[in-house]
Length: 303
Ligand SMILES: NC(=O)c1ccc[n+]([C@@H]2O[C@H](COP(=O)([O-])OP(=O)(O)OC[C@H]3O[C@@H](n4cnc5c(N)ncnc54)[C@H](OP(=O)(O)O)[C@@H]3O)[C@@H](O)[C@H]2O)c1
Image (cartoon, helix red, strand yellow):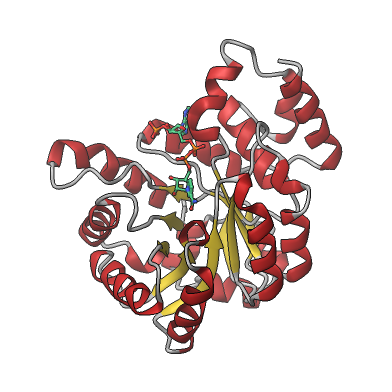
C-alpha cells in the first residue's frame, strides 16, 4: 500500500492513527516522516517557515502566499512555524488557513516573546485568535526570551489542552550555552535551532543532547536565510547527490539537515509555489546516511 499523507487524512487516518499503526505502514508512505519523541506522532520532514508572511491585508501580496500554502497542503505538508514577531504573519496565516479550510490537516507552531508570565499568557491568547484556532499545536519560547517565566505558563496551557506541545527556539550560536541549560533543566517536547551545511555548530552538543533527552528538533535556516545559494553560485550539483534522491541544491541542503538523526522537521522559509515544489522533493526518496552526510560536508567546504 502506498498513499500520501493527504490520502491518509481523507481516510480519517491522521498522525495519531499512523503512530498507532506503527512503522511498517509509515515506511510505505511516500513522504518521509519522523516521530515526535514525546508522543510518537509523525510529522513530514519538510515544514513551512513563515517569517516573510507578514504582508498585511494586501490581496496582491497575499495571493502568492495562498498559492504556496495551497501547494504545501496538497503535497502533504503539515507543520507551519510562525510567531507574533513576524509582523502580521499569524493574521495572514489565520485568514488563509480559514479560507482554504485546512486547519485540521495542519500542525501550527507559534511562539511567545514576552518578559513575564502574564504578558506571555496574553500573547498566547492573541496568537490563538489570530490563527483562528482553539488549540495551538506547538508553543515555543522565541529566542529563549524570559524562558524561565514563560515555560511554566506554557505548561499550564498544555495541561489545560490549549497547546499540545511546548518548546524553545534560537537561531544564534551565542544562545547555545543557555539553550543547552534549558534543555537539561526543562521537560520540553521540541527545540527549534539553526543547522545547515554552512552552520553546523548545533551538531556539536545541542542535537546529541536533544536526542538523549527525547526532544523533537525543528531545523530553521537550512539555507542560511538564502545566503547559501549565493555561496553555491553556478556550481553544478554533484552526480552522486542523485543516489539519495536530490535533483536540486535546495534538496541537497534540506536532506543534509533532515538527515541528522536528531532532526525531526526542517522549516525552509518559502513564499513561492515553485520553492514549495522543489523543497518537498527533499521529503521523498531517502535521506543521506552518515557517510553520505560527511561527503556532503567535504563537498560544500571545497566549493
Ligand atoms: N529564532 C527563531 O525562532 C527563528 C529564527 C529564524 C528563522 N526561524 C524560522 O525558520 C524559518 C526559516 O528561516 P529563514 O526563512 O530565515 O531562512 P531559510 O529557510 O534558510 O531561507 C529562506 C530563503 O530561501 C529561499 N528559498 C526557499 N526555498 C528555496 C529554493 N528551493 N530555492 C531557492 N531559494 C529558496 C526563500 O525564498 P522565498 O521566500 O522567495 O520562497 C527565502 O528567501 C523562518 O521562516 C521561521 O519560521 C525561527
